[in-house]
Length: 156
Image 1 (tube, rainbow, N blue to C red):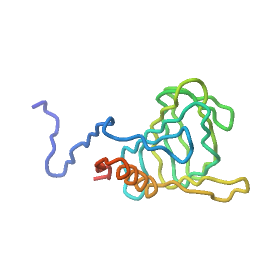
Image 2 (image 1 turned 180 degrees about the horizontal axis):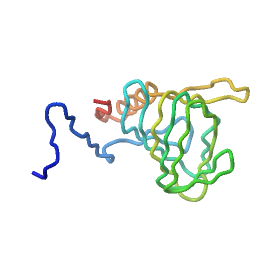
Image 3 (image 1 turned 120 degrees about the vertical axis):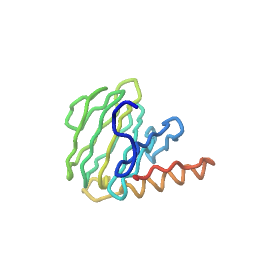
């Protein structure tokens, strides 16, 4: 062997995932899709996010922290800041923001979302929510509707 610790008592094996085997799930917002990668118990989820240029991520609030690493495309934050491939954003719990995919290339980002994303109306009222339960249900529903066998994306 290579002298590195192997799996065994007290050690958990790594879990790999063939991303091509996972579907892109369309969101209610046209031009937006998510590919779920892992459901973190009831705490949050990890996903790839894809959006076509011009698609708006409306005003929303995070109840938990969010980490986003941008892989491709560009997005303009509500603050006016322009982000591109290789940029990383940390959003603390309570952060309220909006942003839009811009340019001529699809936006692709890896997102780790803890807690709930609350989508807000003009008066600040919560119009809808996304969390691990809604994302898990969307994944199961999409798989059923397309005759796909759902992968076990749960935390082990």
